[in-house]
Image 1 (cartoon, rainbow over the protein chains, first blue to last red):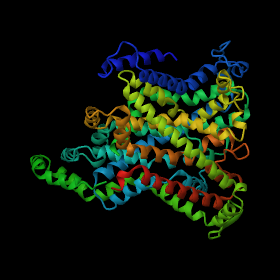
Image 2: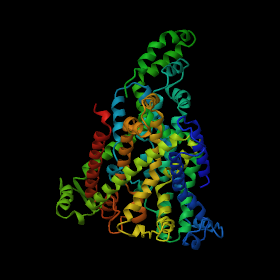
Image 3: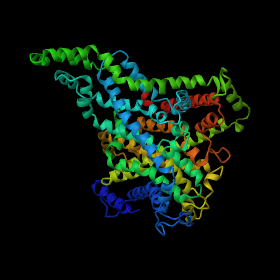
Image 4: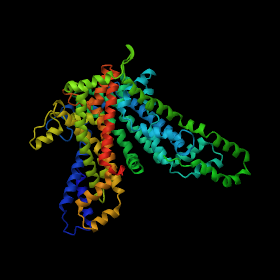
Length: 297
Length: 330
């Protein structure tokens, strides 16, 4: 990959500042090993995705050629036009956007509200609710999948967006993140808001919310990513093709075009690219998710 | 959380600051304050309302429902649910003690134990190695971190599609193997190789997510301790094994536990790529639970399997905590 020479370069930089190595300009053996490892990991983590992107412009014959060719010959858009011409494909993208968008907007609002109450208000039952929030975070989905389906079925909500969005609209982990952020804000905020005559609701959305924007971003990104990539719950909750979200649609698309990898690869690009775009726009928040949860504990 | 006396200290502050204002807006202040104070419990529950609904229905109720369900036989819509006591469990354990190799559920448990042991150990070591490698870089750390993290962002469905193609008998992976004169198997159609193929995919897609945890922990290591060791003449390997690793124990536990909980419930790839085959070699408990419930309409039995899987995850996580994170007991 093109980055390997850069890695060599940075390796050399590391050598210069390490006081122990005062040999010649050659890399010491362990630095060489490091650089090789970095290069290998870089190729293995990005290689499959880059190769998929390139190959999505290949003809079917080209995609299945052995030995595999690196570049398409000829380049073709036909995979994309054929995928999009599937009567359901755009519908699947729209459904996935509704699920991910709806879950994200609602979860950001509702978990912020819940986090505000749990971190900054005093009322009987507060500790109990917070304890339950921590406890249910440890319940694996294995135990809830089937009863969740039965609940949704009893409410006659299966195969609707309600079935997808309702369980995701206020998530315990998001509430936990909000509480962690909000409890660090100074106590005087509410006091001065109150003196200015603001109601609790106004204090919440005009004073507190602007101060926890990073938490809102983290929750928004996590929720969107989870819903956009979700496969298991839509598989259980949805029944008809016109309701499928993109991952579920791709599953059935796979059965329909079993060996047409050119189409399957083009289809998967529609699933990958939106998340990558989000990632590059909000990169610091993505990394912050893991950093925040492990540092703050 | 510790109950910080947020409100009480806020009211303690109020008389002097609010006093000045009172001259101007006595009426409003009084009204607002009584609203704030008197309605606090009501207001809090109004703020919590949507969350409490979800928490109660889709987490707490559903969990009890799941456990309760395992004592019933339920076939949706045909006959009313019937209480059968421990019958569902009895049946499963009977299979275990008579002929587990014929029981899809126990086959799936064996599969998932192999899967978890290998995936979790390899991905933990790999994640730590990647983090340590990145830690030594002076420049370009961010670029590499981003590059390594991208597989973790990609949806399981998209990666399954991609690897379906890469694992083709004439695919890229076998081509790379042929370059070093190894005849690659027909990965996903070979009962021996299908599970390892899914293991590799899983390691590939999750190792970098855990690398982030190690990176965060490495940044927080007390620098003085490592410097002191260097002064005392410890070499790189000594200071790694005797200082870095012990200090990382809580993070190692976190990564191993999260990895275990995730891999024990592996579903997407098994459903998407192999549907449990060939010859049940990639059947996972979650897939068997799904099949029992939604293909065979045995909801009660599926619920009993869920409970067993949950208990297994719970016990394993507790054991890991005991073994890895020794600091917790002290």
